[in-house]
Length: 154
Image 1 (cartoon, one colour):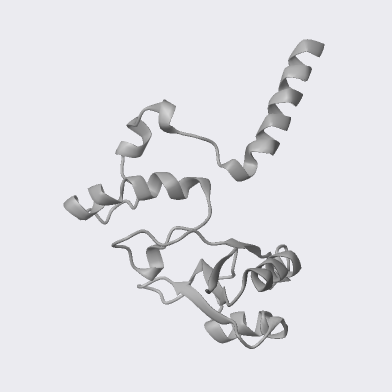
Image 2: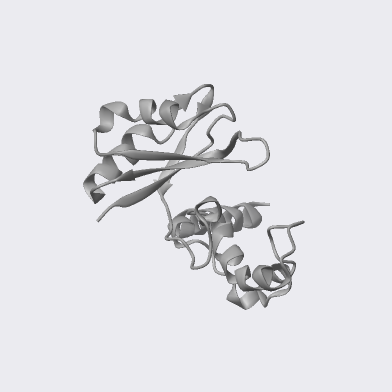
């Protein structure tokens, strides 16, 4: 089973070979993809690296997350699976906005509105359905505790 990694904070002037060169010493079984803007042909700031095993993915995340490439610190994490009906360029990535964007994808297909990628209905949905990203739950709890302690000290 292959593991797909999201690589964020890429410079605008990068191609697939340059990205592959960054991960060259991680092994031969790596494939890379740079997501480009259709109009300009320049990088949209992110891409994907596909590896064969979970262990290799964890090694790459540990080694290259924060790696400075062309004055940009790379952000690397496991990518979320693609939603049905979306192309490669619109694949959701591991982020808190990914879940709300996928929920409104059916609305975008119906009205075919290219002005905005985000449906206005996402902000009007019930606030009870919005949950914090579980990967940040511990940090969120720490912040809440610090805020409560600060409020009691004042």
